[in-house]
Each structure stands twice: as C-alpha cells, then as structure tokens.
Length: 201
Image: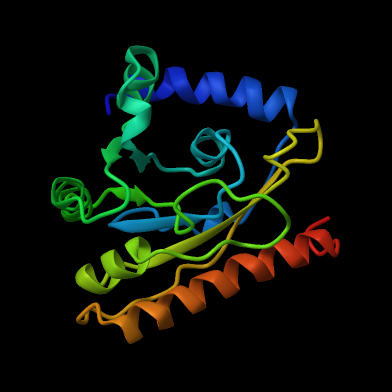
C-alpha cells in the first residue's frame, strides 16, 4: 500500500475510533517493527478489522470472507485497505498462496481464528488458519484481544496487543494445530479477562 493511501485511512480511523469512540490501545510495543507477523484477533463485529488498523503500528493485510467482495462498494474498500478474499467452508489454495506471499514479503497478515463474528462473552472455536499458516512458515503469532466492539459504546472499546508467540516451522498436523490454537486462544482470553478485571486501567 502506498503511503498516501495509508495516511488517509489512518487519519479516518483515528478520527472515528480514536477521537469519537475513544478506543483504548495497549501493547503497541509488542508488534515487531519489521519482518513477517501473523495477527490473530478475536472477532465480535465488522468494526474489528478497522479497529486493528487503528491500533496496530504496522499495516495489516486481512484475510476476509469472499462475500465482502461481491458488493462493488465493500470490494473497493476492502481492496483499498489491503484485504483479500478467502472462500469459507473449504481449502482456498489461491488465498493461502497470497497469504504465504505476503509473509515472504515481510508483511503482516491478519486472520480471525474464529472465522466469523461471535456472540456472547466467550471465544468461539478456533479454525485451522492461523495455526496452520504459522506452522508452515515459522512466523510468530501476535494475539490481539478486542473488547467492546460488539456494542461500540464511547469510552468502552479497547484493543490489547499481546506479546508475539513463537511458532517453530513444522508439519501442520492435527495435534500441532490444536497445540498452537490452544496457546493463542489462552493468550487472547487472558487479556480479555485481565482487561475486565481492571489490570490495564
């Protein structure tokens, strides 16, 4: 993405999520300044991708459901922000290849491990995407906890960025994927619980 476009959307996100919603951000220093990174946030609403864009100091290329690319307007916005489509319910080799190329170019890849928006206070089932990609590439995973995006009440939205989770390059077996998912899920849930307990205030 060119610097002018990034400056435009960062300015817009700062006005909306920083000034208007007064979103709190913690842990920016945990994002590696360079090199490939997989961003793994929980998912409560359509505000989550732009909230990550606002909170994270580096640009994130999100893997997004292909339905968002069927409408010309949402397709334009998603493409402009660097998102790319993935077909749900199966193995999308084209999306996987694109994601691998992003990491090879030392960029940040964003994948919602729950796959779709979740209701309630608990995290949903984690799919294979984040863990499988991390195992295949040996790229670290940065867990991100988003709180309050489902209701978007001013002053009650927060993004907590966790420390990078190192993942050794290995075969993406069922057991290995489950192990990585458990570590990432625990990290996100812990940050959510700690925020609600007042640790970050």
